[in-house]
Amino acid sequence: MMSALFNEYPAAISLVMGLILIFWPPPKRLEVEAERQARLAELASGAPERFLEERRSLEAYGPGHAGPYRLWGIILLALGIALLFL
Image (cartoon, rainbow, N blue to C red):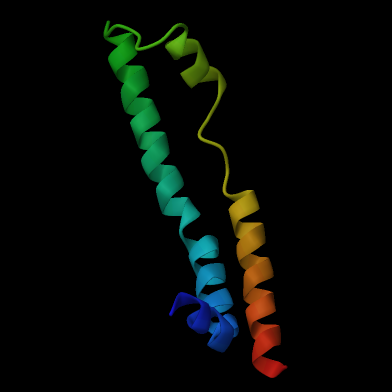
């Protein structure tokens, strides 16, 4: 069933996955950043660290960025559009 879906609708699947990868990361990044800031506030108020140097790692490393996901989304979107015309 699943292989038939991929054989019949590759352009649609590529378009949908491309759009998901382009528009999904920003809201997820905001959610992760809010969780990170909340944990930093807990540590500042005296909560124990869950692992060695948790505070330092939270301060030094952010949640990342959506660049690679968006790039793959753009590639999949372009591929899907190209497959529509082939």
